[in-house]
Length: 493
Image (tube, rainbow, N blue to C red; front, side, top):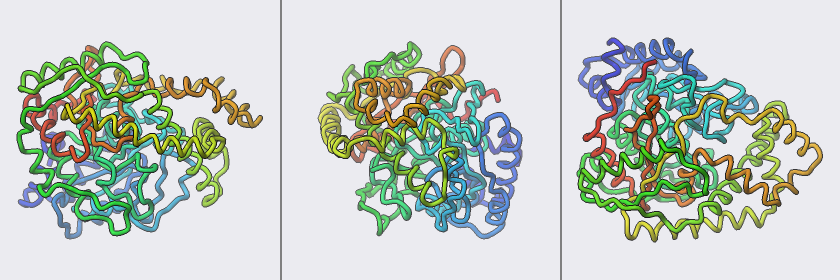
């Protein structure tokens, strides 16, 4: 099989070819590896090749709905037994799990052939993918720009044609952000639907979940069926998934939906004209398709939600740093300065503040639920601006030096108690203020491609659904995909 033939198929289509014996698993792997070797030097999507393991697997008997399809997993939380989970950090390189994560186990049981791990920022803490240890991942649509984060390596790999679908996870937008940057489809499932075991009960106090980035809606729907097939007996939830498979729900007409939309940043920061235009373009398309679309937004205090989100983020970072110091002997030099600053704030934060941030999730979730009583879906930009240039969000050296001085002097706790720290939080989320709502509330959300800026950069839009709304989101996405197909759009890489 040639690359141009391979690129025409999504993962479901490739699996059908293998099932009909029109192509073999090792032939598909050869094409995927060859494509990776041709373009990875330009996009830096794959940071840990697993070619020998993959060739051994492709040569053996494979079963499952994706038998023989090449696949990449994210080098964060998606553990592959016997290989380090690098997490974009020098400090984690000595962490070698002895068991597959539940998501990886289910992907392998589905017959996928994993041949590499993808780039991620250190511990997935940023909306860009520029780790010091592995270097920046780059956007195939313009390698001077970011593919987003934290699943940026996976987004770059799918957009570059290395694989039709790749593993990601989303704790604050980390599937939807790279999907929006790379002209891909990205769905974050609702809380508890996808198991996180066996090393975790749930990721980041329930903020994060595994999923995929794909070129087609049907790939994501079929992958969601794989990830949710059966509950995890050791997990914290028994999720209520629909009796009908997600792949079937994606094929159904969505009906006439009530959709409220807003382009205003929930934290009061600027939103670019391009992000507004992307939403307006989607509003026109939805109206043409017969949906009821009107300006509306949930009565959520966006700034309070941002602070609550980052409070949990600080605490989680402090815990991660402490655990790696304990288990691997990692030292300060093994972590990025930004990570150490976040961890220092987490350590200095009073326990009641953390507890209240977790408790306030109830208020945010109920406010969003009230919105969903009158509207089926919420439409917003996914990003507040087009994909930024590589290095644009790098913390200036002088700021890093000041932060290191503050940590040495033990003043970080005092700063964290001032109003200045709230302004730091809002500035950090200014390019991606829309995505944290779905994580805090545990609702499903998706980024849908279609719009590109005059410079040719992708810019997706986000839909947020109610509890159990994955089927509605997939059905609408499939309708939009049918009206404006995007899967065969290929970047000029």
